[in-house]
Length: 470
Image (cartoon, rainbow, N blue to C red):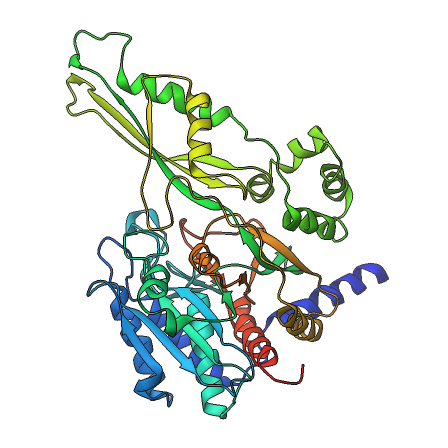
């Protein structure tokens, strides 16, 4: 009984730590910015990133930022990016904060609520972008407005870039800025709010993750064509069957287990936080060679599976031209998240072997994020100032919470900033329950306490990071 009460007190204290230690005015400001961003549709199909950029630019103007410290621009009228600069003492090179304003498509009929309405329900904020990543955009905007209001002078310029087309489209904002206005975003290192953060387990903070590397994104088109014919005269040589048989083989295929210096350190650290079979399995995969049964058990978890393997999954299908005709074409999109050290071309060859059908033609879908020969960038060295500040703030806000470098299972705009020679780290302060990652999915949501806790954390972290005496 005493033990149960003690555990309840510990969990309660962690819960309190998640809640924001922010004043009512800051709480309302961050809420209003978050709501405003969610209710601006910024999808690639019908949305408008420029509208969101203009809305945030107005908030900065109202918050005392002169027009000379704001820049808006992009390749077209719908995809304009916003760059904001808070001037510092110049003791160090600037730090660049990046956040994308665009979101993944969302259909009203798929959701319980309207994805482009900011719905507050049962302690959560619902809406497209509440996890990926308008929460982070709102937190960073709120932080820079607070610092300006206080008259805070950091030891380096703080640059914020709110950008287009991280999720898709042909007008990636970070890539456009680095190619056309490098002077506006040049920095010693980059903080990407589209990564990292606090992982919760049953409401209790388990660890603070910092994304120190990421997988490489790639789309491939798989196509089968044949002469087709009348549906009353079916034949075995059917484009749909060829394609689906190949995709079924892909479904059953598992890419080899891989650990790099970041993911190895991640599992070494997490094995000390976890308990029971899960902790034992983490230690077992660190052996050389990794224990196969431990790998299999961990791979049942989608997050661990993605951390340990390159993954390729079918995301779209298109086939046939008429209900009463044999298909002349069947096509699928396969999305891969590639472990560091491998190129898209290498994975394309693996896909050809896996589908094992010469009639399935595989092509790489060109994007702004490099060519088919591009490899994932190796992890950059860990930035000492960054981790000193993190340990100070995390130790105060969540005493004893481990800070663990990790690999982003997805892909982010860090691919562009790392390529530009600016080491990039995923750092966020909002907390998400393990297993409740809804980014890109139905009923995306963010806990209210988690969001306000992120507002509190990021302000304290950024101020600590950019204060001369650390």
